[in-house]
Length: 128
Image (cartoon, rainbow, N blue to C red; front, side, top):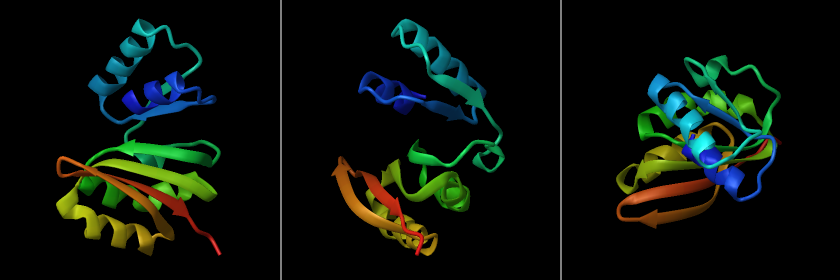
């Protein structure tokens, strides 16, 4: 939810915020209201594998290594060809593991930001 709120504040349109956790879902609704941000669709699904939506141009995911690794096939299915996947919430010590797993799912690493032992990785989906 926090990434959807930030994206909305930065001017993104057609945002779908997806949370699998009930508390996070409710917190996103509250924060959208507090920040007077309308037009963002917020929904809750059990897992990304259950998301029923047209493929996305961009997916922002702030979740831990284990969830990212588990969700890579679903993220692949949810992105348009040449789509962007930005993942954060990854420890720098897990960098190689996450990047190797993403490459196995046809993602290419475009850029990495590191701060205080945490990384954010910009991937692009390559379908050739």
